Image (cartoon, rainbow, N blue to C red; front, side):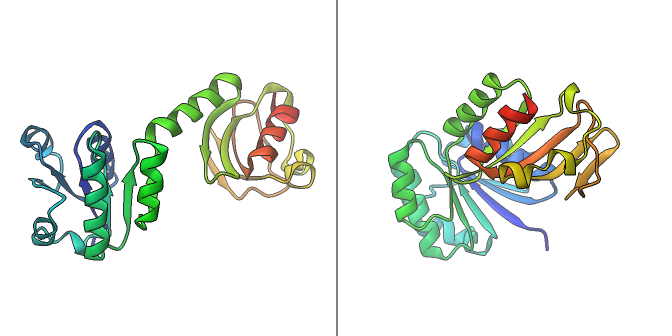
Length: 219
């Protein structure tokens, strides 16, 4: 059976997430209390229903407890978001992911045992800021408060260098986990693999390690 997702809240974030999950080949049940939002998505999703997600009997009748993951994507009602998360946890949904509107909202969701908390606006702001100050940084994702994964474009002065010559693990403590080349992606590159101009290196390490490698080697 295909992995099944329930996305609760079909605003900008929830509808975008739902469309991408469908595009990736998964089954998606969309839920929103707004009939217009459901009507706009019903032809794109596996199922879309108008429902009050804070009502445990309603979610139980929709079989949400049997889904592999439920995403609380409610965009403007913190109370409804929190109550929905409580209902999902009480129903025993395998994995509950929720969008947080603020740090305080995130702390409450964490106390409720939500498996993953997403801060779309904050995280996007952090990524854009890093891209603005570093021309070679293509993407930046904070894995935790200490660890980062970053995509760095290889500049001209590093063309022809092997991973062994760059030696990021010994010199900086971070690792090159992939190289995206025109001909394809090299996963877990060997010491002998060479980077060329405009290749993309995927680096993982602590925030400080990645930043130091970026400033001292790439820039």
